[in-house]
Length: 303
Image 1 (tube, helix red, strand yellow):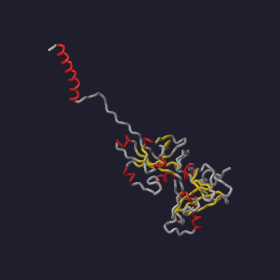
Image 2 (cartoon, one colour):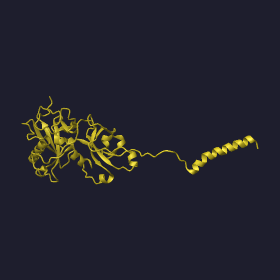
Image 3 (cartoon, helix red, strand yellow):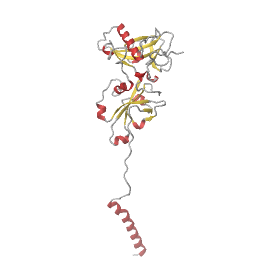
Image 4 (cartoon, helix red, strand yellow):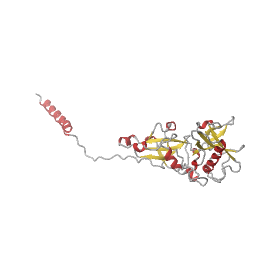
């Protein structure tokens, strides 16, 4: 055989051995394994700078992965706030729920101080002595937030609830204790204007001139036997609590309407056992802003 061919064969065999032997024996590379740093889960009180497009319609039906949520500073305009957190799927499954916002309403009510009890204007549990069981109105949209894909693959199953205005607009301020200190951000109000038919149309933006504000919704029970006059009086009393004043009418500048079955404001979604408690401006006047927590300060009338 030609010596040059023999030399080529030897070189090829040596090269093949170099490639195969490490594979058979297990290739070892120098280095140290480093754990992947997972992001901290959101906490109650965190502010959300932005939510993904379309999240307003998804709400609780389609949870939003954390990859699509941008947390940010609470000092500027924000899209929402984290009001509830559950560390795992079991905690979420055991959380109390409401028809309005699933597991998000109970922590929201606590976060925003949405309660009418222990006020100076009534009993410790005023709904027990009223003909209507009232709940203060908050125009909100709730979103259920879930871990990132990386976190889920690492075994995390937490869930958080983010709440923003019903209209999806950004806002300034905070929901934290808002009803207790009279500082409800304007985007969470439910405001209505008078249509050509004489009925209330809405809800619309409370920063614009409007005729009325929905202060509370209430339930009369299955029989609905309370008299209309008693229901209107009850609406006036709950308005005093929501407005945080002993004189909610302000000498006739405001009036109160208890709307049954959506006869006055058909757009607020009433059902046969539900009532809406509206505060309305006197004829010729319009409101700009909220009367929630106004106390004995000036009413937000349009100039």
